[in-house]
Amino acid sequence: MISTLRAYFFSRHLREKLLLVVFVLIVAVLWLSNLFGRLDGFRHDVYQTSLKLAEQKQWLSHRVAIEHSARQAASIFDPARTLNGTQLLAAVNAIAAEAGLRTTSSAGAQDVSNGEFAVHTIQFNITKVDWDSLQSFYKSLQQRSPYIGIDEFQLAADHANRALLSANLKISSVEIVHGAP
Image (cartoon, rainbow, N blue to C red; front, top):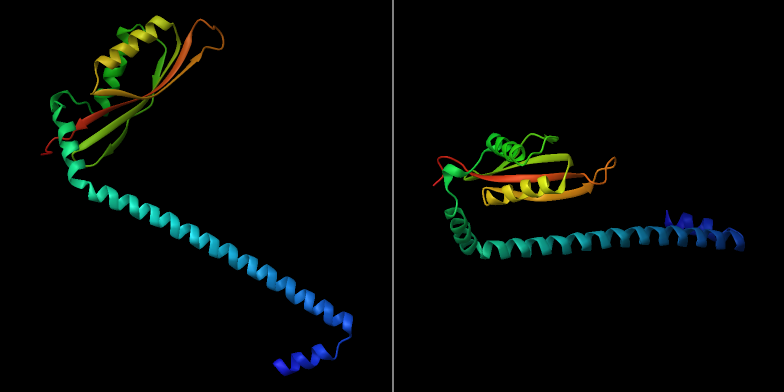
C-alpha cells in the first residue's frame, strides 16, 4: 500500500505534490492541536483531582478535632428548644406578627439531615414594611439564636413608596433528631 501511494505521489506534477504535502501538513496540524487540547484537558483534570484528594486527606487527618468540635457545638443546644421545619415556620410567623409585619409570605421548609442533626431552611419574604418594624423583627430573630439563624438577608426599597422596604430572608434552624446519642 505504501509503495502504491509513493508511486501515485511521484507520478504527479510538482504543484500537485506541493498541494498534497500542504494538505497532509494541515491535517497533521489539526490532529496535533486536537491531541494537545485533549492532553491539556486531561492534565487539568488530573490537577483538579489531586487538589480534591489533598483537601479530603486534610479533612480526614483532622477528623478527631472536627468530631470534638461538633460534639462541643452540639452541647450548647437544648434538644427541647430545637425546631423542626413546621415549628420554625410557626415561630418566624409569630415573631413577624409580634413585630407588626402584615405582608409576609414564606416557602415551605427544606430539610437536610445527617442522622443526628437536621437543618431546616425557609425562604421568608416581607413587603411594604417600615424600618422600625423590620428592625424589631430582626432583633427578635436574633434573640432566638442559635436555634434560629439568618443565612441570607436582602433588603430593597419598595418601588411604589420609597419610605417602605421589602426584605427577603433565608432563615434556618437546627434540630437535634430524637434518638441521637
